Amino acid sequence: QVQLVESGGGLVQPGGSLRLSCAASRIIFSIYAMGWYRQAPGKQRELVATISSSGGATNYADSVKGRFTISRDNAKNTVYLQMNSLKPEDTAVYYCSVAEGGTNYWGKGTLVTVSS
Image (cartoon, rainbow, N blue to C red; front, side, top):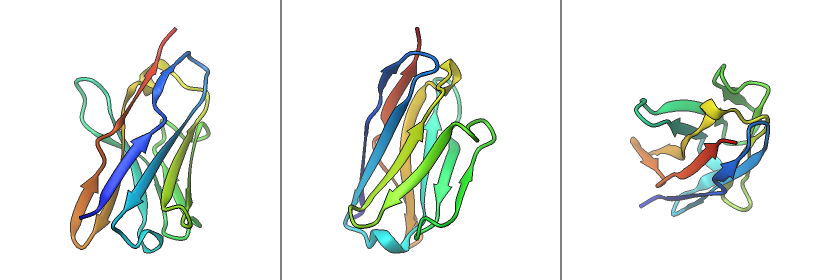
């Protein structure tokens, strides 16, 4: 079964930066698009960014465009989310996800808290 493990979350001040990582295993990583999602307290999970299997195509939620960058290293089976100019409203648990064999797989998430 596919395994996804997120890391890199933490407490950061407004305007700061964090880089999240998601390590994938038990999957032919290089042939699948990947996504980052987030869920803030009391809110539904929302899509943050996606990246194609090769990394050549990316998409972002309007709320993070120009501040967040998704990337991947297929040699390391890892997808990243570089988050800059963080705002308090970015506070959430961040999850990576992949759809493989008709099933959506999720990691356990990593908490990002933006607060002064």
